[in-house]
Image (cartoon, rainbow, N blue to C red):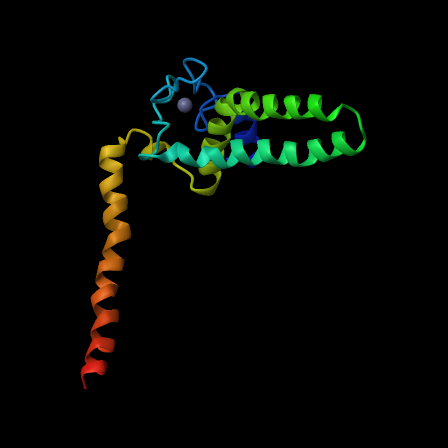
Length: 155
Ligand SMILES: [Zn+2]
C-alpha cells in the first residue's frame, strides 16, 4: 500500500486497510473495528499512545515557529499573542485528536503492514504470539550470556 494512499485515508479518517470504514463514531469515540473490512483498529493495548507524537509534535512545531514570528514581526500585542497561543495549544490538539490517531494508524500500516489474512485476529490471540516471539530469544539468550561471564568470575 502506497504512502500517499495511506496519508489520504488517514486525512479522511478512514480505515487504513480498505479506505472505506470510518475510524470514529464521535469526536473522541473510536470504533473498535472497521465496519467495512473488520480490521481491529487498536492493534494492542496502548497502541494509540503513539498518536501523541503526531499531536504534540505538530502543536509544538506550529507554536515554536508561529509564536516567535508573530512576536518579532509585532503582528499582535504581547498579551494578545500569549492568549492566542494558549488557546491554540489547548484547542488545536483536541481538534487534531482524530487526525493524529488516523495518521498514527496509517504510519503503523506503512511501517509494519497488516495483511488481509491478519485482519480478523483479535488482540487476545495476536498479543501472546507476538509476546512469545519477542520473549523467546531474549530468555534463551540471557542464561547463555550470563553463564560464561559468571563462570569466568568464579574461576
Ligand atoms: Zn476497513
